[in-house]
Image 1 (cartoon, rainbow, N blue to C red):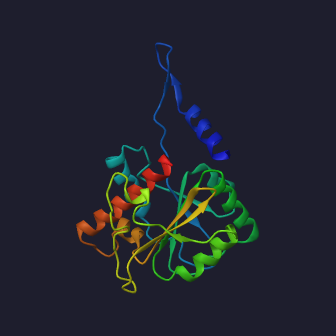
Image 2: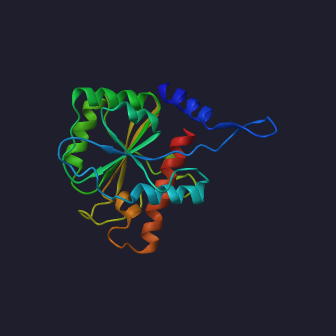
Image 3: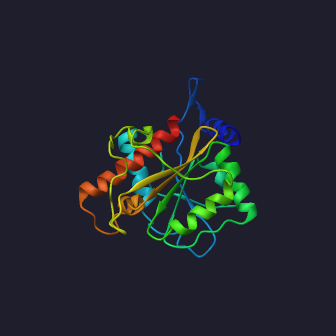
Length: 223
């Protein structure tokens, strides 16, 4: 509910009166946000991922993201409520204090969405961290039939494989709260590195990563 009111206020702040006296709504510009979390994990990884994803979404979904920059928000900050989508990545430890866990829960319950990207080695830490946010929920693997794989771009076999990691098949997990997907977790693929292209991926691999990212964005705004 809080996110809804912030969005209305955002639209109101984008209104202007033309010379003819007519009220017009200027297209709002949104930013994607990167989550800064405690524990020592490299939350700051993949510096161009969100900018490249924003640019791709603008070109293919006609969104109006700021592709020149992204926001950085802390787990326990009220600023997180200003952003409909928050992205978290890294290789190492992720910890939420009690206050941060409550804040993250309030954000997700209120309409926010969290994208978790396993940059390799995050899995043992992200699961207990999110269990602190939603003790009653477990990550569930989303079936290939889930709508998140069938938006603007078609992924009939689920997540694309971007990086080798342990050579396992990629998996997409979700946290579902009261029937709504509030968190999407990509494992054994590393979409974020594909968005950033830090490994000089072939263009077709990078495109698949960006297309899957666009699907997530489109699903979030459509659910």
